[in-house]
Image (cartoon, rainbow, N blue to C red; front, side, top):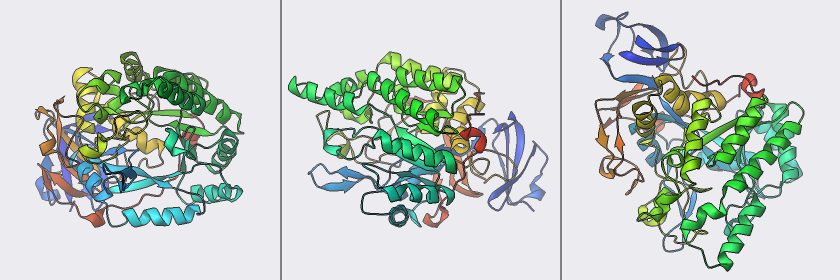
Length: 479
């Protein structure tokens, strides 16, 4: 007898959307059959979703839990832990998170991973994985550790091409070391996930605007500007293309039309270059810095113009951008708005819970995109690019039974009081055209009509191996 069958008229599968029964045994989907295949006698529980949307659980490939963030009193602090963020994620229909291991000088990568495990193991309600983050001048012995880590299931390496702010000296990796890392990842089957900004331009603009007395956070778009994204993306792409076999690149938090165009041109040549944007970049722009508590809408690099915003939508339409993430950094409103200058504004956002509802509204409700495209951008493409597919991101036999049911009848205005992350939400007052009513994680119903039943022992670490075809630049055509 099956453990669970979810039946729906709008079930989004790799082969398209239709009326199906999704049959679950233990942690896995064992069959996707025509609706009505299984009756109540064949399963311990039958859930009829009716006209609700049944989709694979969301995947957020860019979150920061227990991340260093200054407190409002100036002391060292941290963003909220995996327990808080994963609870909110499951309420919002996201079942997998990818965070970061930060390597620092004087340590090995295995030591950094072990320390990060202490923050996560047994402390997360949903499944998760890590990118490895490296910074500064890289010691020669690190390159071998990167190769070992890729082979051990940690295949994505984050690199900064800027220090971001003057106070973060040592974050940037110089292009000689980036070149060396690219050669390792190309050989070992890894991928570099890039924060791409031109450090010379960024630091020049900080210096220039400080001299001019224009230091308010409203000037962030002038510092973290579109030229910076253009120069950095193109330099990174050219360097990756020069490596034997070509290094695969995934640009995080693409914010500008120049970045989209650089990715589009590289992909047109067949290069393995991919792009992620954020829901706040797609729906907020530089004008929002002028709103009350305008820091709420910021994450680095910066919000850009309405024209850049439109370019992000165009990139998501034509396949230049493959994922919509959050750059989640969950903290209090006091922490988020504590800075008033462009060099002390807190990055990140509390956005993992409303992400699926917001993007369904904008993609399907307002723009009429097919459900498959929405699911690709919020789940499937991240699974494919990050080495989780088809275990994650698919309603298919053999896949983990990670399932979200969205109810289009639940149109509502987002209010922070019914969210589960922080004491504020940048999405406060935003109208959404659907809301998750059921979340299943590896076969367990963890959220149902607002009732939460996950346990901290439920979340498991996911080691990953990347798809050679995607590393070669093939696949991921938009639906």
